[in-house]
Amino acid sequence: MLQGKKILLGVSGSIAAYKAATLTRLLVKAGAEVKVIMTQAAAGFITPLTLATLSKNEVPLEISDHSSWNNHVMLGRWADVMLIAPASANTLAKMALGLCDNLLLAVYLSATCPVVFAAAMDEDMWHHPATRSNVEKLLSYGHRQIPVASGELASGLFGEGRMAEPEQIVEWLEHFLLEKAPQSRPLQGQRAIVTAGPTIEHIDPVRYISNHSSGKMGIAIAEALANAGAAVELMLGPTSQQTTHPGITTTRIQTAQEMFEQVTARYPHADIVVAAAAVADYRPANIADRKIKKGEAQLHIDLEKTPDILRSLGENKAEGQFLVGFSLETNNEREYALKKLHDKHLDLIVMNSLADAGAGFNYDTNKVTLFDKSGNERSLPLKSKQAVAQDIVSAIIELKHA
Ligand code: PMT
Image (cartoon, rainbow, N blue to C red):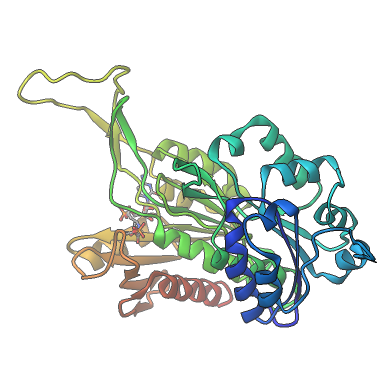
């Protein structure tokens, strides 16, 4: 996928620099020509010799090495993309300010190619207002950011700030460079909204009502739509799942009401909506502002209906908008799915059942049947959620052009 692409990898000083070896190997394996430059601080974490061996190119650290001078301008002009991974807090700050006290920064300042950075640092550093402002500045220069991941950090703490995994970075670059290539992408220019994951409905400050949705199905659909060229807005409920796809903008929500507001605000500009979220149908009528204390043998909580997002979208559907719903049941699946297709004015409904092994919540697989509004029905075997998502997107493309 990266055949013939010229990638300039800038490695700065972070413990995540050890991942630069895997990253270089994966880029080369994907067909890219890779040149690596490092800061002196990075060389404390991984040797230039390792990266030179893997990239099959020399790895300069300084603008001049005693008798020779490294042409930073030509390096920046040679590349199709300059990838700074890991980008430490220090390097990000210097890039934002335009400082130039090492080779990596000199190359960065003279680069005429797109610049992409994958930050790596501890969570507190990542959230510090100075870092936030530096990242904003870099984005305002037109640079692209590969989102940081959450997980265990070098400090031993858990949180945001881990560099994305090398596999994710390569995938991100493939999409990024593909986006730039004028290849045929059937949903190019289309705007899509995807809802995914659960919602949570608060009972009191410590308790809530929710469900087992992981968001995997919805995220796979968002990625398949983005791969087909759509600009995707992902409305994602509380889950540890995430996507780093460059064609997807993720908005995190918690409650059905928040999801309703976020989706409704974007709906007038959307061409396609896929509602894969498991939205709570009911919420506590009153949220206690203090923890409810143990008392009587039974506790009754009054519930009220949440907004039915999909129904509202169906009722307000404009000419040309394409609406896809999901139906999750444990019994009478077909009957209920067809009723939702009709009542919510959908173009397509994806039925899945908790009665099928390997289907539904949290699995990496799903087994679905597609019903469209013209009465066509297509049962698919159990397959990965990515493959199911691809089938759904193919059906959307086919039906939109029918
Ligand atoms: O997230 P995963 O772990 O990967 O699991 C995937 C999934 C099982 C959650 C997914 O495949 C799925 O079935 N999603 C829909 C679950 C659901 O809430 O189904 P439903 O039949 O109750 O709702 C029908 C449709 O109305 C759905 O498109 C739902 O998003 C939508 N809805 C429901 C209630 C509500 N208040 N607003 C809505 O928009």
